[in-house]
Amino acid sequence: MSAQARISHTTVGPLAGKFKEKVSKGITRAAKKWNLQLDENLDLSEHKFEGEGTTRLGNRPIEKNTAGNYEQMYRQLWRFLAMKGDYDSMLLLLSPPPVGVPAMNVHSVEEFLRFKRFQKDTKLRTYDDRKNVKDVLKKDMVCSGGWVAPKNADIYRAAINDIHVANNHVGEYLEACDMCRKLPESHQHKGCDHHKGNPQLRRKGNPTKHSIFTNSIVQRKKDSVEYEEQGSSQLLPSDVRLLRTHLLSTKCIVNLQMWVIIIVSIKLFLRHDEFHDIEMAHFLPELFHILEDRIESLVLKVFGKSDKRWIKLALFSDNEYPDLCPIRPLLVYMHLIGIKDG
Image (cartoon, rainbow, N blue to C red):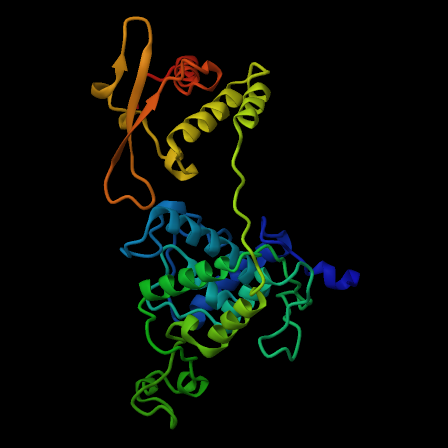
């Protein structure tokens, strides 16, 4: 790989300054091109990451974890589009997007898929493999890699589909017609000779339904036919004890917090996002089992990813193996940081 090719290589970490400084002006020009009114309060130089509470998808009924995954995709796509200089496609990722926002360019949507799926430092080519994709600085772009698991492509496709549906791009993907757009404004509604009565003034439709993208998805699956997902190995009690010894060997409240997260999650078989969402209000004191000299069990409610309602779970004290007891470190942690409610 030549030094010149590596200059264009930017991972989807923080956007490099040479690209970032062009974003605000580029998006402003794109909005003007499509006659769109931008929200004056938007910071156009930064992507607004909204996490699981995203409003980017309107009222589409999706799980919080799925929304969080989508937002990760949108953040990475924003940086890719900024590198490429496709400011037209970035308009749809604004929150809120302008009224009448055009659909994303199918070429950029497909290129980002390969940008993440192909091996790091592979030159990014156009979908038909005829030429290298250039960034906004006119240098060859190279892939960042990172998406080894095929399921990432499916999540990405769903994320792009849903944001287009949320912005009324549900039909066939169609590019804007330059001839229609060049007509005098008073005649644009009539359309050009090729689109009489149906002018194509803006890019519209869903790019994930276009053959350029669907063909690429099919090929990516063929490329991954031998992929085997490796499951997480289970921790033995001895492994858990080693973690405990390491974390509690120093007087560090953060390490104590980490041990509480580990041992409580193990005892209750919780996912990370399920533990992360626990609040004091989720504990149910009326169901606690408290004796004169000790606490036998605590009860809390959890709303898991696949749950349809709140589920009550009991957290039992482990008096046989006190070093693996979840209640003792939990209460010590709460006492040390002064948690009483909330």
